[in-house]
Length: 240
Ligand SMILES: C[S@@+](CC[C@H](N)C(=O)[O-])C[C@H]1O[C@@H](n2cnc3c(N)ncnc32)[C@H](O)[C@@H]1O
Image (cartoon, rainbow, N blue to C red; front, side, top):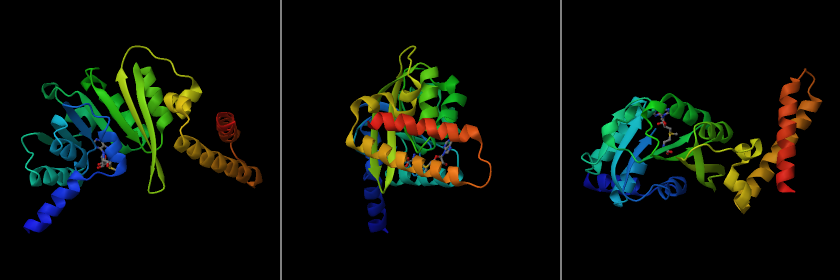
C-alpha cells in the first residue's frame, strides 16, 4: 500500500512535456487558480517544487474533482491547495488573491467561454496561461477585445499533437490583424521550425479538403469554400 501511494505521489510530480511548458509560465510565488484541473497534477507539482505559494484547483465534473482531491490528499497539500467543484472561474473568490490562472487541455472556444462568463471574477492583475486544443483564433480574439496583450506564445508537439500555449496579461487596448489572430502574433514573427511544420501540415490538409469539395457531388456552401480558400492563401503567404 505504501509503495503504491509513493508511486502515485511520484507520478503527480512528473508532468507531461505540455504541462511542463505551462508550468514554466507560472510566475514564481504565484497564487494559482488551475481551472479544469482534472487530477490536479499542475498545482500539486508546482507546490512540491516550491514554485507557488497557494492554489485553487477548480473542476466542474465530479470524477475529476474527486481525482484532484485524492492527489492533494496523497501529497499532504490540503492546507495549500483548495479543490473546488465549480463551473469555470466561479471556483475563485476575491479572498484567494489569485495572481495567475491556468486553463489547459480544452478547446479554445471553451476557454474563451469560461473567461467571458467569469469576467466579473477577474481583477485584471492575473496572468493568464492558456493551453487550448484548437480554437486558438477565437480565444485570441477574446483576449484582444478584452485588452489582454499576448506576452508569450509557444508551440510544441507531443504524441503527434500540436499544442499551443498562450500567455496574456491585461495591459490596455491592443490591436491584432486577422492574420495575427489566426497564426498568433508572436509566432508569426518568430517562425520557429515547429510553427512552420505545423502550418505546412495544415496547408496540405486544407488543399486536400478543397480538392475533395471541388469533386463533391452535392452542393457545398460557397461560404465554406471561400473560408477555406482564404485560409489556404494566408498559409501559402506565410510559408512563402
Ligand atoms: C482534458 S482535461 C485537462 C486537464 C488538465 N487541465 C490538463 O491540461 O491536463 C479538461 C478538464 O476540464 C474540465 N472542465 C471543462 N469545462 C470546465 C469548466 N467550465 N469549469 C471547470 N472545469 C471544466 C473537465 O471536467 C476536464 O476535467
